[in-house]
Image (cartoon, rainbow, N blue to C red; front, side, top):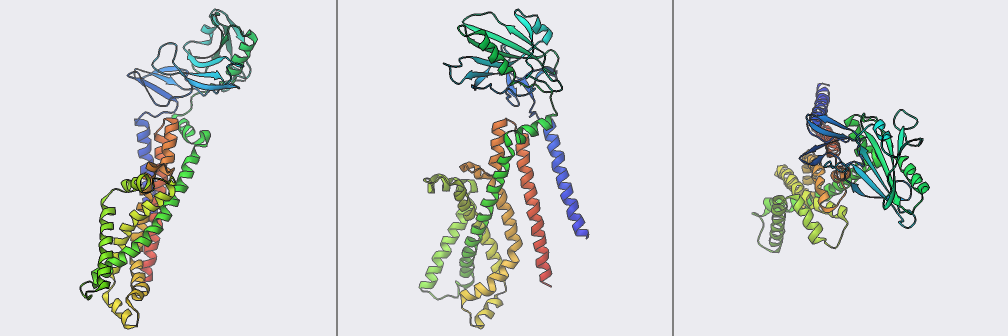
Length: 438
């Protein structure tokens, strides 16, 4: 009971330590999903669809993200547009009609530094009631419609209230001057309906939602986890097969080479022993990621089945370490066991198969289980050959959201949980083996 309570306490302390480190890292570095800081003319944080609201924090401007703006029907996102006030940040987003002949207008959503009252004093301003544009806690957004002076294009803007003081959202639509005002008004109203300003939530909650809930990005981690486990299980089985063969050849040579008579048998065994030694030296002497890339880009350059190649590469790599583990187990079996088998009428192969290797495997099972755990973590480099494993899944999320903290911490936690689980299984296996010896 005491050992179980100690194990539980260790697990609890490990989880608590990870949680404390994660919180410290999060709040001592900038990776906020809803806030962007400008330093040296560069944006630090996530590049959102649009931003509204400016506060000052530690003497620096902080742009606060309020929500997302999606393109109205028949429009597509084209590119970011710079803030017209000249701030060194892309705060607006541009939508352009999918068919210029039928829908030639453009829409820009951007922040406007000023209150709704200030917007109402602009030339051409009038109150409007676009009831489908809403903010949190209100049924309809107060808004101001501004008909702008005509030039080559006809333009209208709708200024929407935001939850932040002295900040509005400007939705501007423009069409060629030969288009009707009714078409332009319909465009602006449709675009304004796509804007839903919301109050800023907790940075941690916003970061979690952005990285995992939006667009079901959690599925990248789940699919990557399945690929990681698939590669690991197949690779460890392949490694055990290779390891047993190599260990048998090496141990046979070590135990019998001095007593063997010169002849084809000894020559052949020596040749295979030399091959095994070269294999062990090369595989254990080079990084696994290099072996993986050689397999993918050189040996199997014509194939793009990254998962199968990763299984083979990690299996061959694991086989070298498993071979030495099993060889150590074979050499640890008393030599009298071999002699006893031979005295019973078994030949050498039968003795190894029925007597020596089973005893060796029993003694090395915990070490093989630990090799499985090591291999599980080593597969995290599979992304180098375009395999979408767990680590690559987290990296894909980071590339989409521009937020590194949540996806990387999530990947680390998943690996930690798996390692703790398999370590617990190895502990149970070792206890079972110890009990069976009595």
